[in-house]
Length: 413
Image (cartoon, rainbow, N blue to C red; front, side, top):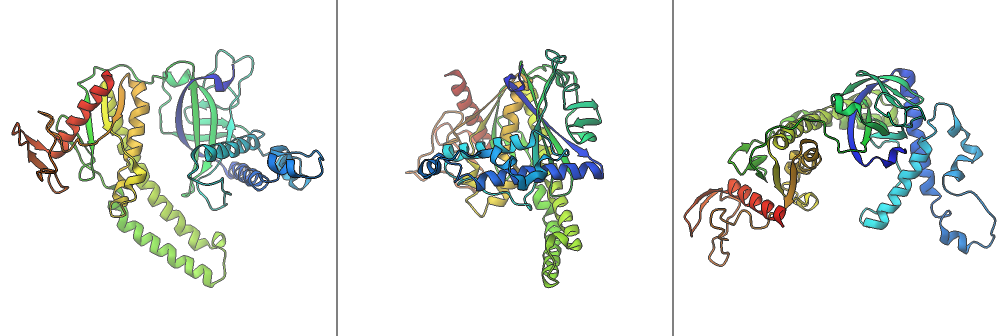
């Protein structure tokens, strides 16, 4: 059975701690991945069918990946340290980029990858031999866990790992499909594993569920639910802003000094040292936010059989420059994505609904505030009384109740 035939997927990420020799092998593969991707983009015009039809001579020549790999100038692509599946995955990403361009048409044609871009990654695949077919797990195959603290990777060997997800009994029955190895801007190496199974992946036991829950997302508080509970916004980026500004000013000064001394930034030791410091501060904020979102999403999905949220269009919301920083800091889109994929793991459901008029509608009698009568609420109005049933509403709690009602209607359709 091929790895791609497994329908259910789960991704886990672990920090790896390679030796100096292993770091050189990883860097060699990262460079190979970027080089092949860039060469395929550079050759994309002359490899196209239109160019070949218009060409006068009908001389047969190699195309695509074969054209790059068989070029004698690039003989270093066949070194022993380079993973044999790295070039194939680079070509697959190149084709996926063109397919996305043809489907979406809003990000432009595939762009060249720079040496300065982070994270720097390359991808490889796990394969199983005839003896392990039918008994595939994370402990056999070309890529496998030796134990809870060590992972074996092709060409690299055994590396120490620090898992962010425990290796429980449910994960032991999964297969490793693809592995992405990369280097972050703060200098840490990581390995992202895609696990697959032929059954629904359930890593948690069933727990007694509470009533369905509606959630209203807002900037004043992170979220308010239909039961009246308010979840405070931690503001991790805002709290770290003072340190970030100080570190980034120092980085700008060191950049100016390097330019005055006519040094390339990659060779300026003081600049690179400060760059790592800035990257670590940004990484800390991201880790804090992800930890908060994971804990909250797991608690909500674990304790409720249905969670209903509002549909958010983050790209449109970020066009408001006054609120763009605050919206990016809360991580709503990430929070919704976590709820959606954790729902199947805990036998729950998570759906989104159109938030239109959820704030302006009375959750008790269904009356919609009339704009002609100047009844509509402004952003300053946090509490209001329904003019029909005289029910006192807290703005966000009322919106959460309306979101829950819309979710139940959508679920019963």
